[in-house]
Amino acid sequence: MRTELATGDRRPLYLAWLSALTRWELEEDVDEDEYTSTLEPPVPAGLAHLTGPQQALADFLRVDPHLLTAAARASGAAPSQTIDKAALAAWIRALPQPEKDALLLDAALGTAPQPGPALLARHRAASRGTAEPSTAARRRSAAELLDAAHEVRSEHNRQQDQARAQARRAQQSARESHLDHLADNAEQAWQDVANLIGRSSAAPMTPLSPS
Image (cartoon, rainbow, N blue to C red):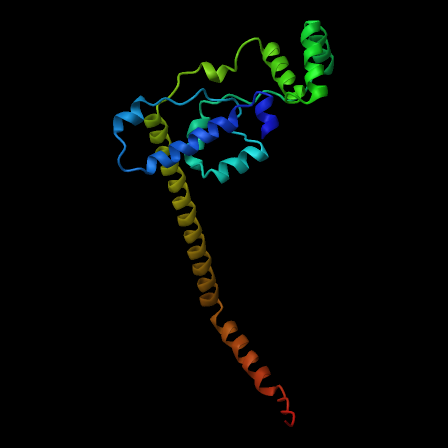
């Protein structure tokens, strides 16, 4: 998680904000105007496809999954993590020599975080030329997000109800088909029952062993 943040991935920070909003929604003494006036932070890209550590963080912080789904609607696709080694090498060569010397000195002395993730973040930002497109989108209020989460939750519940109703209809249909089959073959069914009873009666009883 630390490495993801160092490389410029802001999804963990947004998840922390969603966790706070999840808890805030449960409070009873919040003025509705507060929900309307509170705006979300810039939405990071890739919110719909979290990494393993980020999903673990969302679970740990108990982020409402429906709220996360609603928030992710304003999130763009996550930028590719593939590194163009040649482009990165050219970018590093273009850095001012004093800056490169300072980075190497800090790395050697351990007086600063490892420069790798931060350099990758700077390189990716320079390659894009601008900030992530999703950060420039209109920021939604907490009230809008909570309303959107309610819609997602309602749709999810509706789909579950439909799936359960479909399963019940399938079970009922299978039962009726079985009963129809028995009705059409009643004579054979009774004959099968008689044969089973006859075989059970003819089976020798196992004597009890002496105690």
